[in-house]
Image (cartoon, rainbow, N blue to C red; front, top):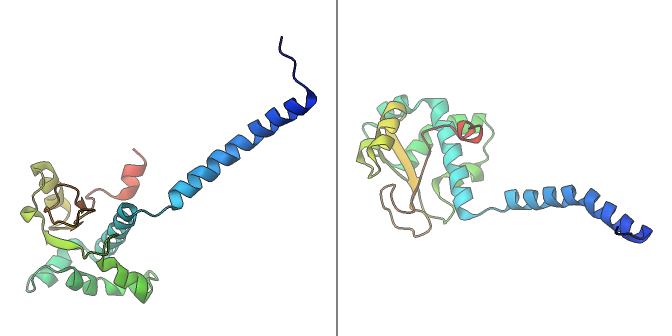
Length: 159
């Protein structure tokens, strides 16, 4: 049988006691590291939240006379943004993805994604918003482009 000195026993107990705290600290650090992709997804969630508050279809009726442009869309959702406490800097940062490139917007039927995604978009949103992703080449929601999600983020988290 293995015999441990009191000093070694203390070290083992200390390690066992500290291990959960160390794991928790590592997970916190990881969750607070902001990669460009995470920042982009977070920004798309914020835009989606504001669009949902205004109603996507009513926004499209207002935008019908204008070409689809992320600046016009953000102008239309500026009132809810103020109501929800977005600062001027936070609101103006919604125009750009994590790589500093402007977001793209187009009718959902014009994007180059699979038909399942187009059907989901058509049922919920008449338009799609996306980032060109790390390569900064607009691939119309293909390749490494990051489109906004049709499904609310909280639904994905609890599946």
